Amino acid sequence: MKRDLKIFGIGGHNCKSVVEKVEILLDGELDKETECQLIKEINKCPSCLEHYAIDDAFKKFVKNKIDRKNCTKDLKDEILNKIKHIDTESEDAIEP
Amino acid sequence: MGTKKTKQQRDSIFHSEFFPHADALYNFAYHLTYNEEEANDLVQETFMKAYRFIDSYQEGTNSKAWLFKILKNAFINHYRKRAKQPNQVDFEDIVSHHDSDSEKFKGSVDLRQEIFQGMLGDEISNAINSIPVDFKTVILLCDVEGFTYEEIAKIVDIPIGTVRSRLHRARNLLKEKLKDYAGTLGYT
Ligand SMILES: [Zn+2]
Image 1 (cartoon, protein in one colour):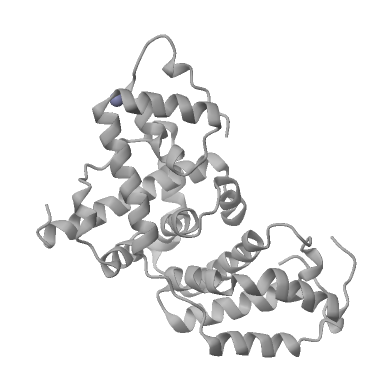
Image 2: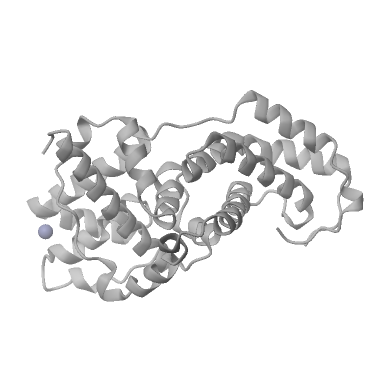
């Protein structure tokens, strides 16, 4: 994703504009150049760095602590069995 | 729109491109509904639809996102039919009303890193389940399933900018909930 980064220009560090982009950075949605600029800015400032650390921990926490539920074998078998018996010739397919 | 496929071609696509996502689909369905029965039904319905409409699927494209979109639509159909709770149904209006630029990034919830360390899966699951479904959906798609903003935009049918702002608001809401939990558990 292309982001306009004028805010980092000549004026120097702006915590608000850095912090706004931390989530997007962690989601891997910044282009390389913007990412490098942002990381430089984050490293300049303890407050931004702390914000980054918390958001990073939070994202990992959500991903790792949510208990993953898997499709049971019974359900898989049931689906495969139904698929086997679907008669597609009689259906007029339209977009789902 | 592709040409009509033979049963054999359909089965081949189904088994190589669709069925491997069964666990991910089930996980998404389960966290949307928090109900095993409903999750089972949603996953079944998704695969039946995917198979029936396989002619509109382009082989080798993003089958996971395609299936998630079918499941999410099935969920919304059931949910809208079933739920007559006004606070839930009207929710989309509330979101668009508040989605103005000035409110997109209100600043973040004050939270310390240590808060997460003592928390269990149950606590995060309860917290996720307590936030409105539109917010829950983007968090599940982004943080749990690892979809890109572009994929989420397609699955949920909203612009990429809205994905970004909704994720931000969703995370802030979730942080608030976790902070409350942490408070009751004496972590703060
Ligand atoms: Zn700063």
